[in-house]
Length: 379
Image (cartoon, rainbow, N blue to C red; front, side):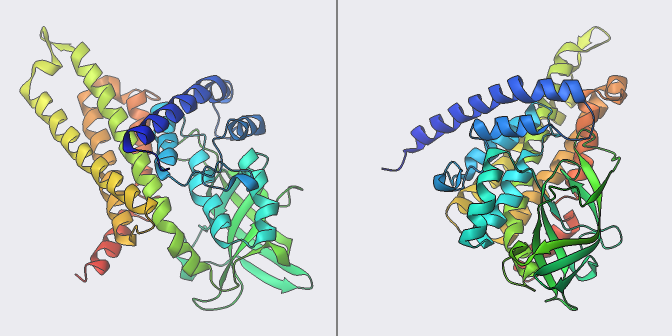
């Protein structure tokens, strides 16, 4: 019997509380101890797997939790942002890489790869972006030359989250010329065949991000994911889920920003009066809160449609566009309301400000989202 709405909300709240405790007990100490953008230890990832927070929608017989309700994934993303632990890229692992395996891998590949991904034995990353091409599929140059028994990969990938710690890389490579010349591969880098170099970023500074260099790296025929030459279509098919996850994180960031600012204006006084007593301050916060509520409703609708198997590309793009742009605007306005305190390096509000600037670029820039929405509406 399916859960009632009240029962499902109760179950999600219980799951959220359990994940919050996991972050407090396992991730916060590691983050405090390391506090460097070089990734979290494998012990942290294995602890996440043992606690049931990896591979939520993977069938139980393959090591997952067998729960296809995306609201549970959203709870994880929201708690990560609220706790200020963006360096722990569990949503990349769960919401971007694993879905490719469940959707495209054959039975043998699933049985080989999914249990390790769900246990935390494998740490996943996706490598699409390249130094000169960005994420423009037509310009990708990393090549996969077919040889006896497999392929040899040569080229570079850039801005790869989890790039330093990954040992399970979902990679886009060129196997032929033209738009049908891209293929997906899994590179299991257990022998450090891939050269990795950290990348310094404006925001998300605790997140492991790397430049990857592959020089004649061999992968067997069984590393090909899906059909050769079909990568562009696969990426377009999977991107709406990625954009939905980004919208969730953006809304959580905007809400955290508003919470911090509300606390600040209640405590801060100017000429003997709290900042919150000024109508201009209250109205500014009210406008931002109203925008956030609208975005949360739009994202909740997109999640509902995703759960029903009918999330349109344009709807995911709309949720991502509105939420990410609002997050950026809210952090800018709220940092200003903090005054000089907001300009302090590594304050919570300044970190949110820097993080928000990058989220409008993830999963496709805001301009790309507008193109998708306009095309769907035949504008």
